[in-house]
Length: 552
Image 1 (cartoon, rainbow, N blue to C red):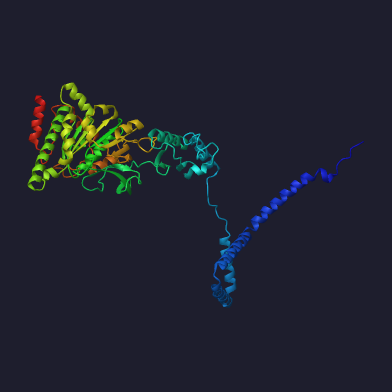
Image 2 (cartoon, one colour; image 1 turned 90 degrees about the horizontal axis):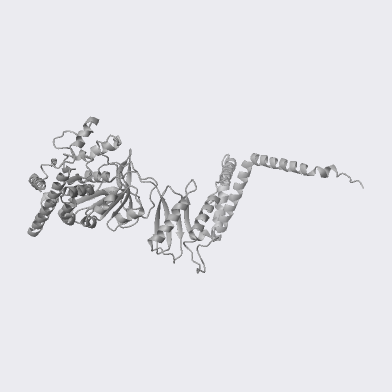
């Protein structure tokens, strides 16, 4: 039996229906574009009507009569005013168009990519925040991450900038190793190359992770707004300290958060120890401290490295000596020990007699020693006493005598530091790249931030006594005779340096052919003369100390 062909309308019906749908969709889109203003006004009128009805319902019954009378009076006034109805219609249409405009939807939660990132982070934390015996685990595979992450924020690139994690009460948050595992995991999963701050709230079982911005490296040496006895070691995060000072950051003036080290008779951290790798900025820190100390006191500088980094201080007002040779360093430190004893004796006599302290005792004395390990090695090879032994009196009694000791050395020389130095230098600074173990060994506590990806010179951590570990960026204080440094930073140092006695104008940076002479003047020679300020230093005591060292 032959099969009859289907009717034409049935064989070509699907194609006709498809074309009809496309035509209808195109017509609808065109009509929407043409009628968009009318749709906006209608939507606005509907919203105005809904708003008016809600206000009418919320109005008490005893106030509805006066409102109706007021509305009728307004309508009558509009009707009597020339062109009033037309102006009223235009006003209503404008209000409806503004009310019915399309608004950008407010983001109320994470998008799909952010939700995926948060869920992956939640799954990674499950092995650390869960146990098999927990009947209602907060962290479980396939669980609800919204219960564990009570707060989060992302940047424009979709990367986490803040995360608040609630963890079970049985997690051992009191153990440093347990906290370190969680911090390492969050640091890895949230993205490397950034610096993270972790705040543990053991009482509330909450951890807040925050991404920290880089500290400014454009702040150069300058006169900081501080009280007597205060020294700015550098600058840290704004929320880490309660104080700000105005500083010049490049071409602008900003309020920066300083790390202030307080010295004097009431200080609990009268001496400081700075440790770092070569090129980390410990010499820059000592130079910055010296510039600030010269504003109110006298300075003794001992450069164990002998590289002439402190040549710009030679002969300046308030600089008692700048030594780089072993013999001169021993003589200078011996004089400093005798000067500390003299200050103690005269201060004791003044207090017993009820008299004020002499002016020469009130003026602070700073002993700045860079690379004492090198001098100790040279002294041992030459059969002479270690310079650190001469620091015992200033370190133990310096606070009462107005003497402050600052030492800087490298990590490989930490074992050569004596017990007296370790005990009395309670203000600590670590600069440059260092492992968490090295930072903890120097500061006595681990930092609550991850190490930065790139460490500029002068970048590190500081801890004053038993206080918290703070991020630190030392002000840029290069040697003004170093031609490789920035010209702006070199000029900033020259502006802060005190003048040499007899100079009529500030000393400018020397020419390249004069730089070697400034370095050679401080060669490592035992017979080098000690540059002494005549008004501030008893030269006889320094001469006797040198003669004793030469004879011994």
